[in-house]
Image 1: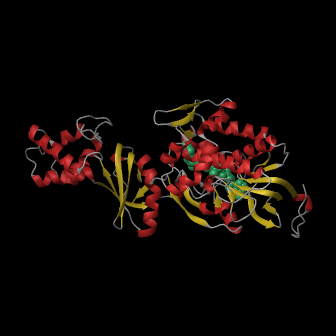
Image 2: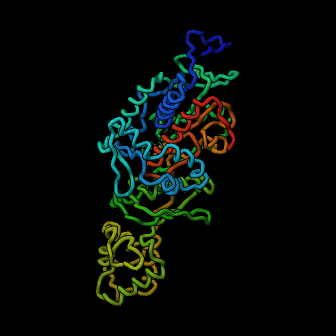
Image 3: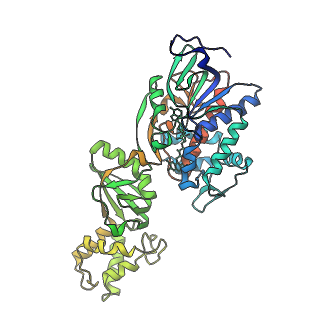
Length: 457
Ligand SMILES: Cc1cc2nc3c(=O)[nH]c(=O)nc-3n(C[C@H](O)[C@H](O)[C@H](O)COP(=O)(O)OP(=O)(O)OC[C@H]3O[C@@H](n4cnc5c(N)ncnc54)[C@H](O)[C@@H]3O)c2cc1C
């Protein structure tokens, strides 16, 4: 492999190391790209040199903390189902289609199994290693990297990348690396302590790519007024979280958790990307919980009326304490998701303007209407912040239109490949983001080895 002629006086020739494929970032996408490149090269009898640069002392930092340390590595189902459930924005699902079909969840699980990591599926479709220990997944990838004869440099942060003729010149504190093909796999910008401070976005921009500004996703919601201490830690099962701003409204069904700073849990995390965007446009956003998302207001009113007729002497407070939360339509009496949490009831009563001991027979029509609107639209406060750094992922990144979804090759810079969270997609909770990082990494690695990569669709 030829060495680059460099005019940079600061760079001594002894410090320059050349490889055919150089990968920046040793997370899920980067490690998978290296492994895929080696397998693909081997299959075609190509003995190319592969280098991986990672700023952390070890690869796979985010894998190790994923899924609360248990690593929700992927989701069960067909690739079509993963795309449908895991990537709610159609353009992003469309972009990822080829990658998820080329390297599916079964391919990923088979690869892990080949390193002794068995996985199991939970009833909700999330897949975890049987060990429930994320480090078993990270270690499996470390071993696969070693097996793949990848020149890995750890504690090696890339400062800049320049295009010099046909080569990429990658500058680090340890010296300069040159490569024929470059794979950028530097992740997003959340949890910056794990190494993801957005360097890859700066590099991609410097090479000519347009970047969609990173924004929060799968992040908790902080409200202007923190929830009362008695609600902190309380979960509302299967409700609908509604966010409204400037006449627009978005909602998500799922569990909601009160925290000491606002709300979190699957419904809040899933809606956080939309909310961050709404706030970016209008500057504010109000949150509400619909405790009866399967009942229309008219249906719920009929149920409350029936209750009032049947049990006039019953205290409304007592009724609410035993009342199912989010029951199925037509099955009001069935506590499928448990009941309204007792700790929430005083707040519901107060918001509806009801006295503590009021009975159904003592409830005037307007008070019943007020209770109805409280149950359908219980205010949770205004969002103060959707913290970008606290998200499991970040949205935004390298524009998808500038990357060929069949190869992960840049349409802007020849022989540049981009993969993983660095790209402008964001998946739901459930293993979709790791799967997308592995699948796009796989595709980048396989295609980086090919002699000519076409950029046509
Ligand atoms: C707390 C938490 C829990 C999560 N849980 C799950 C889960 O259970 N399931 C799931 O599917 N997803 C989960 N995710 C999301 C998932 O981890 C990421 O989407 C995925 O790891 C992205 O992979 P990646 O390879 O694109 O980026 P990363 O894994 O972030 O890897 C990028 C790598 O690039 C390195 N790097 C960056 N800049 C440089 C530079 N200048 N020089 C050298 N190296 C550099 C970084 O150090 C990092 O190691 C979780 C995320 C977090 C933060």
